[in-house]
Length: 101
Image 1 (cartoon, rainbow, N blue to C red):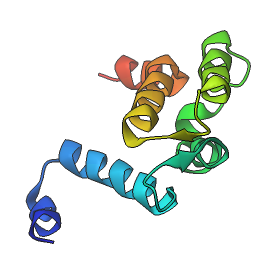
Image 2: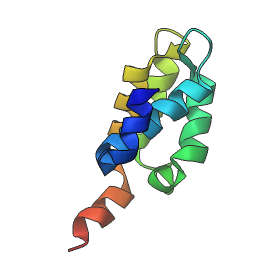
Image 3: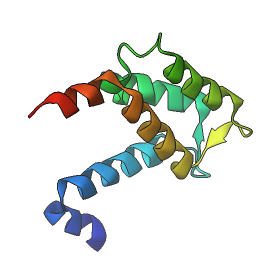
């Protein structure tokens, strides 16, 4: 609890990662893993601005197919964060963010 309280004074980046961890934990099974269907739902609901308009792009389709091909039916937190970062890097929104001065 004290580390959560300390986050109130944390940086924006620390708060962002803590939020991602909490979203993952609140959506995961008791074993601490996220079902693939749940991960897709989170992308569509919690990461909508980053995924919007990406459905036709080959890289986005590849990332989702990798999710479908994941050997287990569940993702751990590390796999989930890699997925989020991969989608972020390929998104149009990131390109818009880079273009703002």
